[in-house]
Length: 74
Ligand SMILES: [Zn+2]
Image (cartoon, rainbow, N blue to C red; front, side, top):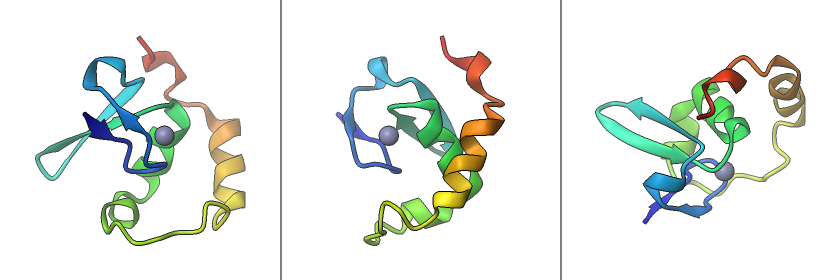
C-alpha cells in the first residue's frame, strides 16, 4: 500500500489515477488534482510536515481551471 503524498489517502499502485517520478521514487495519486498539486511543489509534500488543507486556495482553483494532464488518465 502506498500513500498519496498530497492528501494522505492510502492507495494501491494499481488503483492510482496518476503517478509521478521524483528523485528516483515513484509516487501515487488518488486524483489528477493531487498530481497537479504535487507537480507544482513536490518538496512541500515530501517534507511530511503538517500543512493546512486550505493553505493555498488560489493555487487549487488555478489547477482546476488548467486541467492540462486530464488526458493522461487511463
Ligand atoms: Zn489525493
